Length: 281
Ligand SMILES: [Fe+2]
Image 1 (cartoon, rainbow, N blue to C red):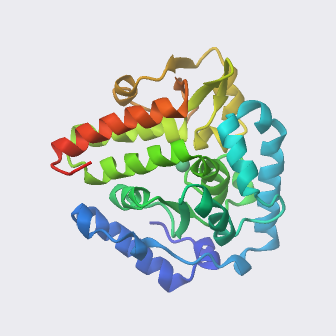
Image 2 (image 1 turned 90 degrees about the horizontal axis):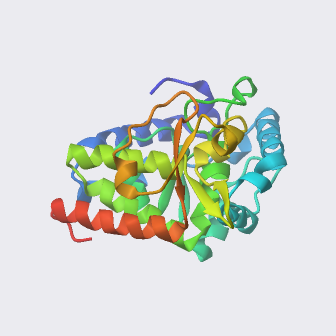
């Protein structure tokens, strides 16, 4: 983990170090001994600067200009239910208060990128590890790692949908208990082509729901309209067999017919993975 003074502004330094160390150590623990509470930090909201809030406001304003036409209705409904502030970086506690009664999901602040096992342990408890730092203005269009715009604006609205909410928890359980490298790789691909870069067909039109697309003003029109993108019908096994590439616009994307399709396919796959791992689904 690189040392970055920005993290210390909105997360206490000692808490940050403890949480990151616990998350790193989780990689070597059996699933049942991983305690996600140790990975979480406090969002020190008062420490956001006027510039941080201004960056949030700019990102939200720019994204909302086209999002209504591009995003899934389910995603947009989640946004309406959560009602993000357009001017100020969101307070995670306020988002959670609204989420609780909808699906029971919660966002939990983390120091930064979590190792895979730690991340999956959180998902298996209906908790979403959420980066609370925000990108600097110089990196408005592209940030290689998550920030609060990607995580809260891009991911969290779907957690308000009961079907997607169940899918994500089932995914977390399967990924947490999976030790077979073959399935580990397949599950990573599934996450990439759905949670991060998923498309869905609604009323005959292809829409975005993956956070990597939702939070990218540049890639969204490319994903929806470019002739260079191979938009394939979702099929879980085919998705899991497709390697992905990072650091450039995605040449292959998968289109769901509904979130029920994703939930049901995941449920079936989780049963397979957990059975092979000797864990009750
Ligand atoms: Fe993400």
